[in-house]
Amino acid sequence: MSAQNVLFDAPGPKSRRNILIGNIIGALLIAGLIAYVVFLLGGKGQLAAGKWTPFLEGRTWEFFLLPGLLSTLRAAAIAVVTSVLFGLIFGLGRLSHVKPIRWFAGLVVEFFRAVPVLLMMIFLWLALGRSNLVEDAPFWAVVIALTLYNGSVIAELIRSGVHGLPKGQREAGLAIGMTQMQSLRTIEVPQALIAMLPALVSQFVVILKDSALGYIIGFPELLQNARRLGVGEGNLLQSLLIAAVIFIIINFALSSLATKLSTLLSFRSKGRARDETIDGIAAAEPEGTLSR
Amino acid sequence: MDNFLTLFETYNVPAAFWVNIQLTFWAAVWSLVLGTLLALMRISPIPSLQWLGAAYVNIFRNTPLTIIIAFGVLGLFGQLQVSLTDDFNLNFFRLAILGLTIYHAAFVCEAIRSGVNTVPLGQAEAARAIGLSFLPAARLIILPQAFRGAIAPLGNVLIALIKNSTVAAAGSVAAEASSLMKTMIEFRGDLVIPIFFTFAIGFVILVIPVGLLTTWASRRLAVAR
Image 1 (cartoon, rainbow over the protein chains, first blue to last red):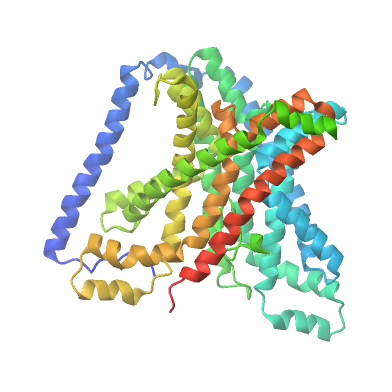
Image 2 (cartoon, rainbow over the protein chains, first blue to last red; image 1 turned 135 degrees about the horizontal axis):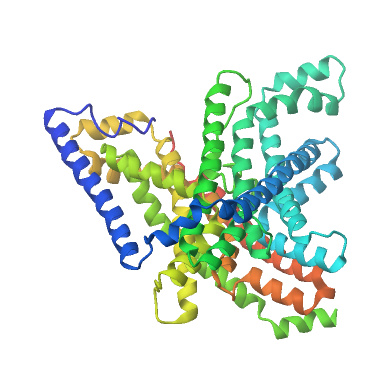
């Protein structure tokens, strides 16, 4: 059922008038809400020019926001690559016909999907810091934690993508003499990846958003730098707001790309392209794979 | 091993998990209320309300939860002196609930909307045919069925909420699980791996029953069509 124009009839003159009145009241309500917030902020001196002018200065961007954004993007970009690799390996593992491999991959995937990313991040940060294995413990803690969680989600995406393919694809592969793994690798997984592309892109949004968790372990990403800027200039509220706007713009662009891909691909692939943006935070299968 | 067990006498691990459960419970209740309201706005015939619902979802779904929670402490409390109670610690707890609610309401709204999509067109047409206008039709016909169709996605939001309750650490809620784990590892660095697995398995134990329960409920309560 399409949500629009279904719960209500094509409106007649009276409904049109009611909708118009409702629309005006709604618009007034929104305007009132915005005005109220602006009034409150103004009352507390938050709209004073001094709180906002730092964002017009080059040094604010040069020394705080841009380096922060850069390390956020760097961590997220590395995590995207490594989690896709992790997802491919464990997705194939879960689809393997060798039982122990399937069980092991299943155990790893279900474990990392159930543990909060922040918990892994703190653990890795402290463990790596103690072991002196790497120089930049917070950075690697962020990247590895994001990889383990999102890689597991991607492994599940690949698995459900392969299950969504018509049986004939696999049978055709076996019929021309491929082994199960060859058929998976060359026929099924490539198609599953394309069918799951929208969900995959939504998962990248999750990676970018979760990279902000690095703030808690002192990784100098965008949020951390925005806080440092805010403490220095006495405009925490404003600098956090600017950081949030930067995140929203990037993520909104990625989300729109995912929606676009999902409409494009619905014409193309045999596999069912599912837009899982709804549960982009958990991106679990509706059937709840945790139940297994 | 004895060393490891004495840690549990010094630190109250179940109490930390209890804080996370409380955070989850209150945030779940409030975000269900707010999310339903937003979903109603998005399916309503009034353009300005549709716009407001869509804008809310697009903004908060794309903001990192960490920023929202940090904003509660640094912005609302630190800079604007907003406090939800006189009790210093309880205030951080409530601000964290506020942040979790604002973030997850956007996902609840989308889950309910996906539930609305499972309701066949004929139901809405029948509601109109017997003369129900938007609000009665939504309340009596559409939403009851939509909720039953939305149990699985709502369950996913709840699971995410349980895990995300650890982000309250960014909101100065020092009593919750991830903060306690940090303290414990800092105190006993030699036991870093067993400590991590204790907390990790705690979350697995919390999350798996919710997954099982919502899967069972979504099958049990699915509207037979």
